[in-house]
Image (cartoon, rainbow, N blue to C red; front, side):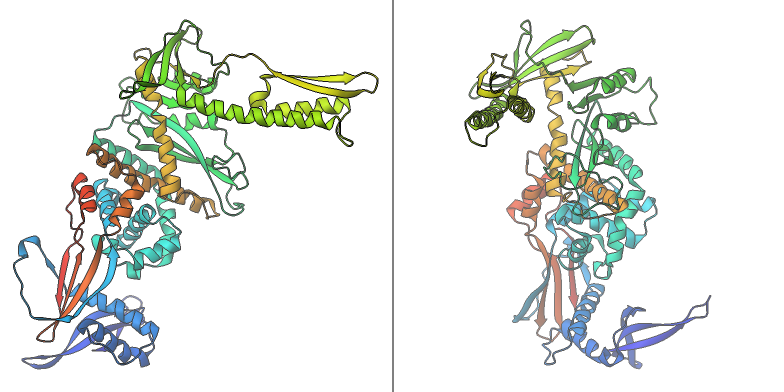
Length: 608
């Protein structure tokens, strides 16, 4: 083998350029001839004095010979890459119907396994991408083959090994067999192309969301009778000064020391995302509702023919203004009431809506009452678990409040303690504000010494108050459903909380390392696309009774790999067989539930 430099001339510009080809000499009936083995392209830049070393090293890899020469590192890396291309190029696909016995005499001591690449999770993800027709949609949007390969690789990487663009690039080139499933070569994929994926996807955000909404609806016969809406925020690592949406606010992850951005998400009753938008980190949650709900009816439906879905929201968004907007637009709704006084009216009959049938333990009771002023039904709920949690929190705050009151009383008798009456009153005010969750349940008296104008004692006692722990109230405009159905619909909000949890913990949404607004938005949108795939997989598995979380699925599938087995035949030729390892029982459970064959990828055989 040797490398040949071949001159070319551009027909339009008449500019000369060169390509490099790996060539071999062969004997034919008409004499010795030269055969092109591999086109090395125009970007081949290895110094000419190393060409022979590279050709020899490639030949050693292909024929399984052990070289006595220690070639430079860059030569060995190139040789391994080109040898892999030659083997794949000359490989023949072994179909299932061609699995007749193929006996050969081989040297058992020459058998080696190499180039192991993970394939299990990649197989499931790529088949789901094709099922949702994401690849077709991206092609329709104008992505060429290399751009499409990079885009699908990044989305799959976010699902399987969430990390930075650089980490994803390394995974695509060195760890995964995704490129073999897709029929592309990630070894020539540049890092710059990976970074541009988020920019490209963000450009087509609305088109992709509408495509997924329609495709998922057709695939699973989904309806949009119930719409769930909520928001979450996530934090930056860094100042975020180049992103106008990065603002300081109260973090739901207790990272208020970092700038935040807010993600608004609309889900249907089955947990599939329908619409998303990225807001400023300090956005007022109630002000986002109108923007997100508008347009959900779809342009293809008229106002009269389309049955509008029931909107379900938490207390943070369900302001009177938003509820009035829903009424004006004729949207039915079930929302959490923001009323502070949540005692259950005495005339409300409570029924059990959640219980353990085996132990007859009641967890949640609910009762309906009609509010004539708002023309709504109010569902009063009492949760045993919520009551225990709230009572535990109250007890903890009461202990802290009483500890601070005790410190203030002891300070009256210390040398440098606060004794002036007005200062003690001021201190009591600060304590009541700090512990406002429980301070209103206490009667605190500061006794004044009229002669010295100092406080002489502090006493406190608990007031008698109505017990409201574990009680919450739901408001609804729907009068056609009973207590059980209203409560069941409201608890669907846990689906959106589960979506946020999955995106943050399993799909690497947090933290955000990008500092520019488009890259930050692109990072979040890639995570959202990955969640579409994740929820599709999980939804299909649950239909078959498999209730694994995504982390469990990808961990189990990570043990299935594609590997190349090489062995020398008696006649001196080398057999290269590339195939996936046999599926284990844990893999088969997942594949069977997803209706997929248990052997991902094709079996390739090369004899050189």
